[in-house]
Amino acid sequence: MGFIGRIQSFSDSRVRLIRNYNNLGIAATLNRGIELASADLIARMDADDISHPRRLEKQLAFIETNPDGALYSCWATEITEEGAPLYTLRFPPEHYFFNMTFSCWIYHPTMVFRTAAVKVVGKYTASYSEDF
Image (cartoon, rainbow, N blue to C red):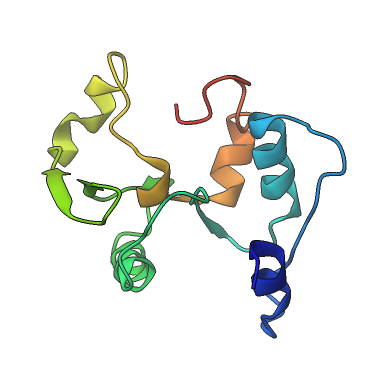
């Protein structure tokens, strides 16, 4: 079963297939997804990303305990093509804000953000660097 067939096989109404019939580019497509989202929270994943099976469960529990945040992230483990772990990126949370000037420690497959908050800041604005 291909990717589209797999999405269409879900009976959960929260899972929808939205197609762009013209190439809008990654940032515009992400922004379209944000506009179409009906949930208060959005979890980002790209097609080549793998998530820990309990990632969303654990992040939601953390978010419910710490509701004042707008964007939440977690550690990331880089793996080989075979799935063997190479190393885990463990960035100290108290340094995230200050480090954003120099590099991005927030990887898409680790983030959950509030839909309203990302709309307030203008969503994705750089068409070439959706990872930042």
